[in-house]
Amino acid sequence: MLITFLVTAVASLFLTAAVRAIARRWGIVDRPDGKRKLHKSPVPLWGGVAVYLAIVLGLVVAAYNRVGAGPELTDLATVVIVAAGIVCLFGSVDDCWCLSSRHKLLLQVAAVLPVVVLGFSVDRIVAFGYPINLGWFGIPLTIAWLVGCINALNLLDGMDGLASTVGLLTAVMLAIIATSMGNYHVAVIAVVLAGALAGFLVFNLPPASIFLGDSGSMVIGLVMGILGIQGAMKTSATLAITVPAVIMSLPLFDTVLAVVRRKLTGRHFDAADRQHIHHRLLERGLSTWQALSLIGALCLTTGAAATAATIFRNDALAWITALTLMVLMIRLRLFGHHELALARSAVARSFVRLGDRLGKPRHSRSLPDAAQLARLPFNETWAALVEEVRIWQVHRLELILSSEGAEPRHHTWVVPAAETDSGCCWSVVVAFHPRNGQHCELRATGPESLPLDFLYSIGLTRVLELFGRHFAEHATQIPLLSAAAEPQVGAPSRPDWDHPRRHEAA
Image 1 (cartoon, rainbow, N blue to C red):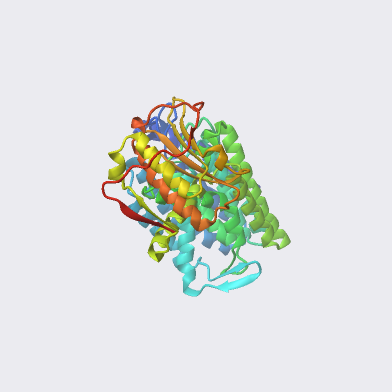
Image 2: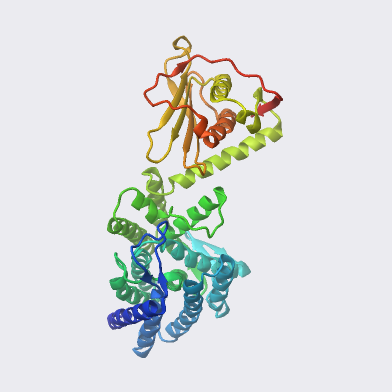
């Protein structure tokens, strides 16, 4: 095992240096664009070619030295070489000519088909000690798992050394888990993957002199996906689901949130952004090395939890650890809080539509539409909003406008002192980020004497969304008021609408 690791790592060193020179000479480089790609100069791609070739060489050495349970190693190594070779091939093409997302998905499915055809699919899973027979459903589940792992590592590969470090740490943990379960042939392949990534990391750590490219990130994801299910096999077709799910929880969590974020913001799935976990950490002020170390520590933690769950036969330990890390990241606003807010807003809008269909009005008011609001000056629009929120027992209303490089502007209204009670216990906030670069936020605060139930908040949210969207789109028409300005007290008169319509809120 040690000889196999060392040979693979040394081979990866020399192969990476050679591929880097070839990629630079042929112009296969990743050029900075000042938006997502912020490196200073073009960096060669095709690092995945070196990693793949090192994996093949390492597996040949392992087979020659008869390491790891004879024919089982040969069979699994053959599947890994074939499937990873297909992924590496079209990944290299994608690095040069940028394939469409649909074509990449079809090729990914084609690449994992040999895994299923050669009999490495899952027929039964075990969760918390309870077996679940999958039958024929095990085939699409295996394909979905492998394709998901491929894309998880592909999406995560957005910072120097990140995908390589995650792959290396995960491979080490999978080797330990496979050994503890007696799957020595899987442990050998995990060691080979670790050796290939260890050699490549010499050139890929910040500042990287070569990138993995799609040819590398997808190869790592595929091999990790295969090792995740094969290393946790209790029998030839029975999978302990805890190990692969927990050990891959961080990359998969990042992928799921990317899908949620892009879906709820109206963007296509393959629309690139800078909101992945490493981008969020960099925005918080962490350096590249600090972000890399923190993500590596998270992967080590989930990997150690999966290992401990395997050794002590306690699945709950692994799941609790993984879920705790995810919740902490959201609560500490490191990652995931933005997507959670988007999901909450989508659920609220769904309930608003449901309330309209049920036809059970709590307040019937004549509200303007967007065209009517556009014809009014700000003072009349503000007055209309103030009168509306008073119906919902709001005691304080704030409009906050901000943009980069400018001091935020506030417009505040409060009820007269005689009408206030002992304190405030709830608030409803809506925020908009239009393309004009402005950030608009409306905050309505209510009294302690009237607790805010869920359906009540939906109706108020609908009112705030109507006016908030108008203010966001017409921010330049709003007069300047600093945050230190005195709040307006009392409610001005409400304008009459040319063509009023009935408004029903749940």
